Structure formats: C-alpha cells, structure tokens
Image (cartoon, rainbow, N blue to C red; front, side, top):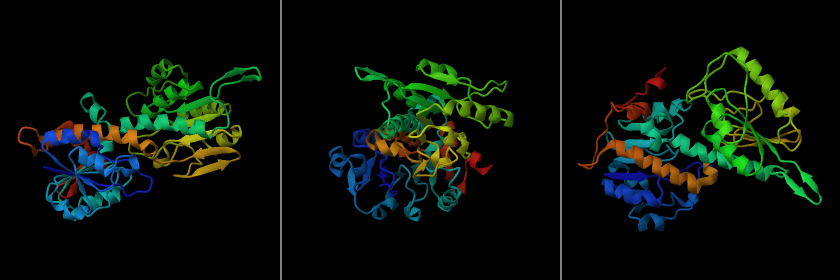
Length: 371
C-alpha cells in the first residue's frame, strides 16, 4: 500500500497532515509513505526528518498519483484527481456543507472521498476527532492572541504604584474551543464569563472557575452541537449579551451550528457599546462569523474596538496542531485497511465510514449533504 501526503497550497495553511513521529506506525501497517517535498516546512518539519523516519520525498506528485492508494491533506484539494486510480482514497478537511462545487467536482471521479469534519462525536471515534483536537488549540491560541493585542494587563496586580484590576474575558460558546479559551484565560488571571445555549455547558464552565451567564427560558437545548433557537430566545439572548458585553475587555466567540452559517450574536450596536481598546476574536469567521462586523482574515477597527477574523487559528500554532492532526488521521486510516492482509478494505457499513464518506462510485453519497 502507498500513502501520499501532499503539501498545502493555501497561503494561510501552515499545517501538514502527517508529522515525522507517526511515519513508523504507517510502516508497521504496511504502507510505503510518500511525502511531497517541503510539505511540513511551514509547520517546522523538514524533508530530512521525514526521510530519517522512513518516508520517501516526492518532488512531483503527478508522477506518483496513479499508483497511490491513499492521498492525505489538511485542506488542499487542487490536484489532478483524474490521475488517481479507481477506488483510491482521498482524506482531508473539505468544509463539505459550504463547498458543494468541490464535492460535485470530486464526484466525477471513481474515488472514495472522506471529509474529516464529519467524524461523529461518539466514543469509538474520539481518537479520530480532528475538529475537537484542532478546536482545542484554536481556543488556546485565541487567548494568546487576545493578550498580545490588548493594551491591558490580564491578571490583577498589586504594586507600590497602585492596583491594576484583572481583565474581563467573555467566551461565547462553551464547546471544545470555548472551554480551552476559558481555561487558558483563567490561568492567565482573567475574570472569565461564558455563555452557551446548552444547559449542560453550565457545569463545565463553572468547573473551570468561570461565571456562566444564561438566558432564563423553558426551552430545552442540549447535546453535542448547538442548535437554532426560537425568536423569543434570541431576543432574550441579545438583551443578556448587550448587558454583559459592555464591561468586557476581550470577547472570544466560538459558536457554530453544524452545516449552517454561524449565528450572529454580536451586533454592531453591541460593538459600539464596548470600551475603546477592547478586543473581539471571532473563531467562527470561516462560517460567516458571530460578530456582524467580522470580515474573514481581516482586522477591523470599529471606534477603537478591534475585531479579528482569522479563519484558521489551528494554522497559527501549526507545529502542535499538525501533531494532533497526524495522530487523529492514523487512527482513521486504520479503519480503512485489513491489518492482516495489509490491503485497503473499506467497510461501508461502519458508522464512522458512513458518516465521513462524501463521494464514492462517482456520486455524492453522504445523506446529510444530499438534503
């Protein structure tokens, strides 16, 4: 079996799908590992490290695409898919709910395409859950960036010259990214509040030492993913956030709804009510953003309030996020092979396979994407 890792082509993508430390595991599974030259350079991994661990460096991937069984990328999809052999496997983050044209293009080829965003949140898939591992680091990096950008000290300081009060952080969305942001901000000495529509998030937020702010409602919302709320709830939510946000120094938003545009939670009116030199980090910017003024990959200054719309926070901590990505990927790849015969053997009835496969037999196969 041959596995190819391709170099990312987007200027803002610094990650690599496989790091040198997992090459040995692929070799034990029976793979010959091919790495496009300099694929890991932006993440801090040179060609020599891959070669030292048993991989082969490829200068022109077009010369080997016809013979590989699996192609792995972080996000890159702009290579010649027609060169792949029948039933070859392509695995990457594809943003499938928003890149329908890409899926239609991939469906023209007789290959198996897997979108890693669709790995289900079940116990058996935890070791493969790329969204969680990457969101964890995104939450951490968002706090680091906010601290760098703010003009205030984060912890309270008592000195002979006087006392400095601690910065106030509001985290909107207490999923994986939000919880890590809470934990990181608390460790830095901030006063942290958090909001989430899910009732189950309250205990998690409080366990990290943050204050949970909540809408008083009879609506029952729970589960892994946030959901669309009623108009009545949204009105109460807006009022609560308006009252809270006015006193914050840093706001980090992480609210996403799977398969839909990110909900707008911070209005222009709220931004204008914030103190000058306040910071908004919008981790939902790739899907439209939680702030009405967010612009993808831009920094907006609105009356002294800076709004950061970076769309790829894991890429801003590429060395570590690549390590997590690589470990998640190899656990997923193990599902696709017969370990004894050392052959590709996809069980299309497996729950994880069914959830993640988006194209096969020259058609889009994922039920959620066909709705």
